[in-house]
Image (tube, rainbow over all chains, first blue to last red; front, side, top):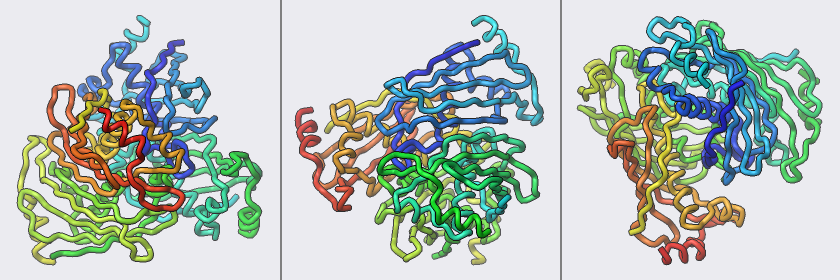
Length: 134
Length: 134
Length: 134
Length: 134
């Protein structure tokens, strides 16, 4: 299992709603920034992959909301990958706040897509090589 | 099983991302507008319930993304409720476009929360009565 | 001066913030949906123009926030265009709620851009023709 | 004139749109995170002020969009305040990318509001004292 802990990040004011805590839809964006930061840290640029015509759409997700996250909190995300990706990559996430309280957990499954031909492809070899070297 | 089909709504430009279709996080907002429109249509105002101090945070969700939704598309959502709510309410959603192509499906589980005391409560009787009359 | 009033639309829950009303950044999205609805109603598809390679980035905007907009409110937007567009198009907006209370007003200036060459172009003739026929 | 430069921050994927760069509405959120980071750095907690019942709604804004910001870019914001606030505070912003290219500039005027009574108040003395000590 590969694990990564993101940098801490602030909740943005616009992410709160009138219940007084972070609106649940933002956690999908938090998961996304976690995986992009992780890919970047292990030496794989998501932006560069896209320039070569491969995109990674999310095909499935689930989230459990455990405790509210408030404006003023700092969050970080523990990302993990259990299995080497083939046509798809599944990542799990646990969001914690500055007191290590679990805020949410969840998972996303992403496909690799040749954008020009709108056709699924396998995980790029360059990325697999990085995973195997970790 | 109770079922409702929302009005058609346009995709907003800001909801697309550079892959060229709707960013996946927006579907949680689409599910939300579907359930609020549904509650309103069956005669239950979500805004009025909140004024009485009861809020409905999402406690769990899952989404499957089947086909991309493009700017210019019209979407509508088929909402369904299989079971009468007790402490929680589970709703399912199927998002289709103007050609009846399935774009996504998923579910949300919501709790009922007494906002002042931050304490879970049961589904308001007024809402249960409406459900039983449908 | 050309004027158009949009259909009424609901405030989305996710658009509120913990102050209890709509977060100010959403008004730029409201202005956007107003101008896209307007173009559509006068017979000009923004989506079709984009497929021909012309996009309309916003180059400047200003907004005045007059009264808060609350979840449960219905908004509509009075859009107006004072001058025929050349290289740029300037539109003004007035957002009102269900009681005709003014919520916000503002303006956006948009350019026409040849996306492939990333070069400014003049307003498409097809669009000018429609404006002149109004 | 008081000036502050924010930490660099990444563009989020969800902030792009199908034109391939950051959707203009996000700059209002960027301005917001800049002023909240700045207040925090000078020793004033926006979250704590809110708990005392004072909120700071935006009453006016303007933005000029100079160059596109792309996914993969790092942005930072130069914030400045020309005048001591009275009933309102006006802040200016210049957004630059990792190559010091100007992406956007703009300004926001914010009011101070007693949330309970929904009444404008003057800038809190604690905040004025900090400004005068800078």
